[in-house]
Length: 68
Image (cartoon, rainbow, N blue to C red; front, side, top):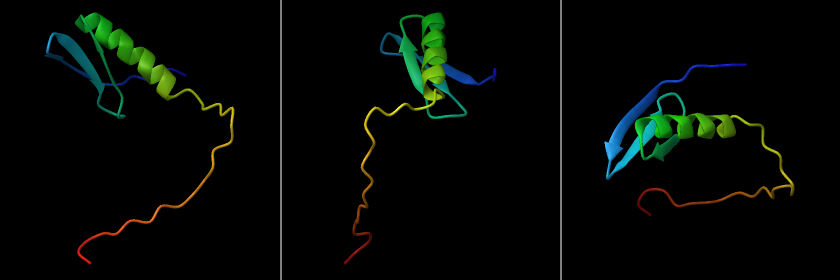
């Protein structure tokens, strides 16, 4: 299945940053083209189904919110 995503691209400290607008994925490259290509690869990996080699342990976490 193919899907189109929107990429925001800007230059920062000598690097081009490419960020997907629809999901929280970003990448970088020395050129605009390489940043977008790296984002494409990152999105492919992001949507790849997970393959756990070790079953994760599930636990709960308790935190104090607000003033006590």
